[in-house]
Image (cartoon, rainbow, N blue to C red; front, side):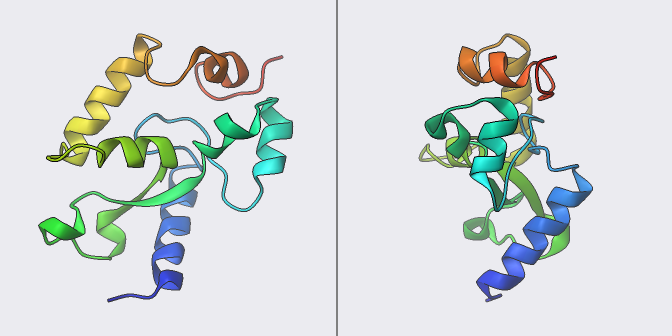
Length: 125
């Protein structure tokens, strides 16, 4: 079983490749500095926490997924946790489809998030 450091390295590699945007909702994430994220987007701590970068296994470990770069993407804490909250989680592709559909309708993150991040996570002008 890989170390926590190895998973963190795989997560950071994925986050860099994804431009530090969540694999599912495509909004920006933070790793080391929630305060910097809060200041940049004017978001309160409770909402900021949901955008912490996590390692997401495309094929879950419980289904035989491995801790390798091809199976790890970076996802915000909210999207990752929401995927695994049910007894029978959707596979990553189906979950991404659900998230993006709900994002398009403004029904995934609270309205305050969209107000702070805009549709693409850019700070308001």
